[in-house]
Image (cartoon, rainbow, N blue to C red):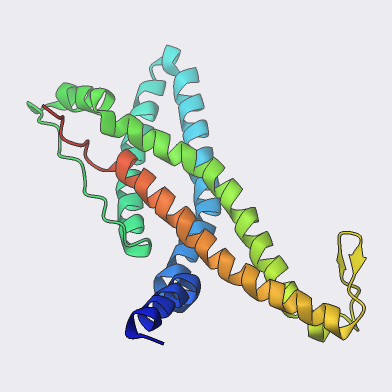
Length: 214
C-alpha cells in the first residue's frame, strides 16, 4: 500500500469516525438540546410581552412594556451571540451600533427602526420551532442507535421488535448491534450538520450585515 493510499484511507476514517472523537461534537449536541428549553422560554416571553404590550397600547401602559420587550430581545440576541461563539465555536460579531443624537426620543427611534432589533426578535422566535424539531430527532436517533447496540445484551430479557421483526437469536442481535454502531456515527454527523446550519443562521440574523457589493 502506497503512502498516498494510506493517507487517503486515514482521511476517509477521519471523515467517518472523526466527529465522535472531537469534543466540539459534544458541545454541539449540548447546544442543540438546550435549544429546546431556551426556544420555549424565548417564545413564551415574546408572545406574552408583545400581547400584553399591544393590548394595553390604548392605555399608553403598553408602550413601556413593548420598549422593555424589544430591549430585552436585543439583550437576549447578544446572549445568543455569546452562546453560539462559546458552544458552537462560530464567531458572530456584534452589529455596529447605530449612531444616535442622544436623548430618549432618539434612543426609542433607533430601537424601533434598527434592523438589529427585529432580526433579534425573529431569531428568538425561530429558535422555538428549531428546538422543537431538533430535540426529538436527536433524542430518538441516539435512543434507537443505543438500543440496537445493546441488543446482544437485552434481546433475551426484553422483547425487541423492529417493525414486524422480533429479535430472537444471537445472530440477529449481533447484526442489530452492527447497524446500531453505524447509526450512532451517523448521529454524530447529524449533530454537526444541524449545528453548522444553525450557526450560519445565527451569523446572518445576529451578526452585521454583509457589505453591499458595488
